[in-house]
Length: 82
Figure (cartoon, rainbow, N blue to C red):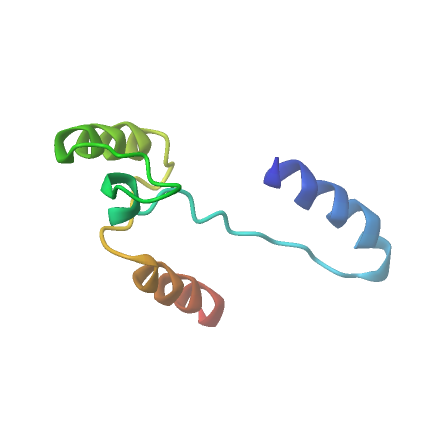
């Protein structure tokens, strides 16, 4: 869905010389999937490990962030600066 939206926006503004890029963070390892809170998936630690292994297979760079979102935001900042 994000990929198509980026393509459409890029086509709409290309004539103005504007480039459109996007980064989809994908899956990050988070305690939310194992918590008993609203919105949590209530997975056991083993189920969560299986979920992460399956998710990592779908990531082209094979980089699934281990930890909370803070690590992901630092990674995006490095991409932007380089």
